[in-house]
Image (cartoon, rainbow, N blue to C red; front, side):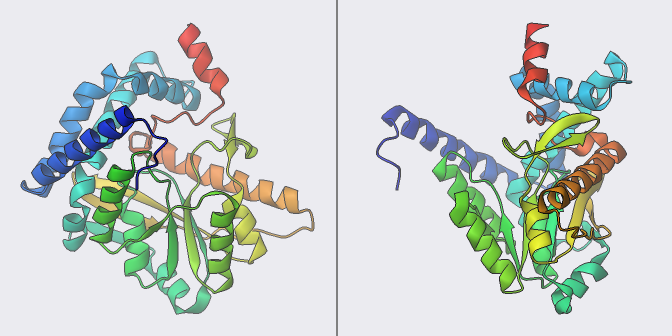
Length: 306
């Protein structure tokens, strides 16, 4: 039910957005998979640079690669729009992509099998790399019992459609909110179930840890849970190999040591996660989600003033 405190205008706008989503999804499901992916790349490469998000991406790229020339930065910015467009266009047809065994390769699947067979629970961590929605499907299809977290969209009608689309390929998501959500995750871990969280977005009030040499406030939750349950941090990433074909990598687990200083141990975990995220971005810089404000607001205010 829509909250009555939401204005009528907002409700109408939400309905329009949901209708547009339905149209885009219906069209995407008509055409061949690679054609849909190519269309998304072309559309976003043309329209993305016209948006305010393009300025955010440019600031982020300059923070991450201060040695790069302005021409190189703009080339990376254009290329990341193509990748983002592919992800956007592919999302409504991910069930078709995942149903094709030739489109998704899993490297390190034995680590998932070990967690499934009793080595768990694990705290899966990752970032918004390429078609990151594929990761939860791979985790669950391996037989690992896992709570997959996500941030619900503001539009409840679109959010319902996103959930429905993910259910097509077997992913039921959990959107934790506040302390109740955290308790639910802890309860899952206590039962031997794994949890999966993205750990590459800004978290106000989080741990100040370096990312590309600059302070980036990062959520301490994954590290805290891993320490509490003596569970490994299990990093994963997605790489695009060609058009709508992917490689999912289950990396070496990160084991956190307990020194008796809880705060210091959590900070160590956050730093190691940020180091993993940075390594993956450096390896494939066009495939990260550059359009969110990852660093403190001062960077973006300075860019606007300039």
